[in-house]
Length: 110
Image (cartoon, rainbow, N blue to C red; front, top):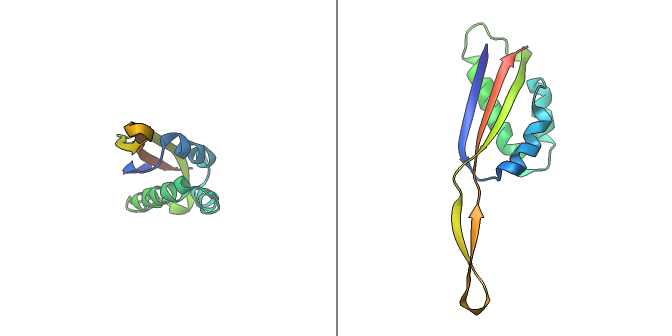
């Protein structure tokens, strides 16, 4: 049986979040949480919260043993970008794109 959790509109670039997500895919949940705990990136904390939520969702399903869960997949999709303006010299404006992500974590029994 599998369970998933989704966090949407998270303020981290999808490219940076995918680097962290690649480290935990296919690992047992306890090991994945330890990896995320000691990874010094902003995305690690955010993915850890979603992983914790996915484990809690799996715990609500009857007959699922939480100790045998493993991370089936971590999907990072791009969300909408915030458009911002930064002033430049001689009255010019420069456009900034502040990217967001949709993070999906799927866990299953091994």
